[in-house]
Image (cartoon, rainbow, N blue to C red; front, side, top):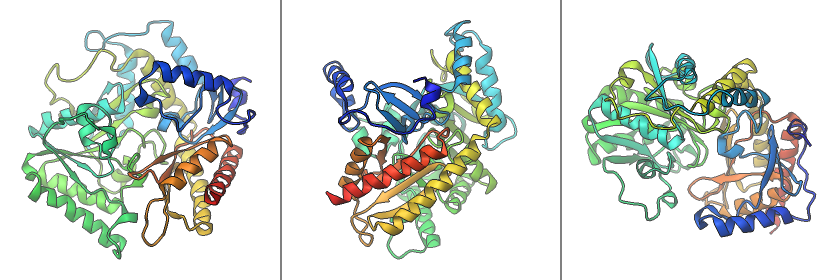
Length: 457
């Protein structure tokens, strides 16, 4: 089966169970050769090839992917135009170090991002790193250089990476066990998780509560005059797939403006058409609350490692020479992939694809919520959707085991899912935007079947 044929296929499990014998053999080799921290047993799958939103394992089982390499495959597994762009670049050269000598792909990609990034300012500049953690860390370096301040405010539920600084920013400390000490000057405020706001609050009261809690940082953490930036995910990923309410965003924008603080939008996961806009910060900009700096990675390069940091020129030019850049940053092959991704996404209106997928999934998840009282909340923006499971709708106690069982059941039926949230009780939806309607319907069917089985245990 070619990858083109695979991209149109439906999930199919042909072995007695997953993993099949060939995959099991590779998993055994993995366990012997790779550190235990990378050898979790939750996903016993070994990929052979992928096309669109589908992939095939070593044993011939076909899976529908609703994880997308955790948000990396918005354009699918093997888009032919991206493949051709990468091939063409590799036939010229694989690498330059941009700090020493220039290649056109870096400059062209920066120009393209400067045109579309919805951050404040008329004249923008962009530079590149290799990963989400790197671009977030670089954004904070830029903010410190511009403001001449050292403090950083982040939020509960945040995930910003696994470098020393970004581990300190990341809320879920399972990602940082035994890795300290971490940098000082980091202060955490509650993210506006409306479903778990104080009981009895209206939405407006809850938003005000979270604004008040943010302002409390200036009294109990550090004065506003010492804060360089706030880093916010427009739609939290690891934290539980939680959208930031626009009224809260507008209030945060005002707090930043009033105090000379830069506002960083971390669009590592939610960017590149995932939320129904090319960048989720477009929603902020439309509300008059555009961020100062935007970071993005994951689906930017269709799977090749590249990330971007964009802000207005006066902010970007504040970094002293030698403080930004790196050997592989803006690699020519990755830049070629990213340029091809942008061409395809704009031409084929991937933002509209995300809206179509999101509307269908949200509608069906809401219908499931009416049928199954273990579904506490359904929330989303475009094709980034979270469905949160609870043991009891009144207490909202997380149904962690139920979600784990649901995921395992789905794998055995050919649907790849992943959880998120502090208690791992929310299932995230991150399917490639190339998914067909027929595949989406089959996935939703499998999802409910897997849930039913989990409830019967």
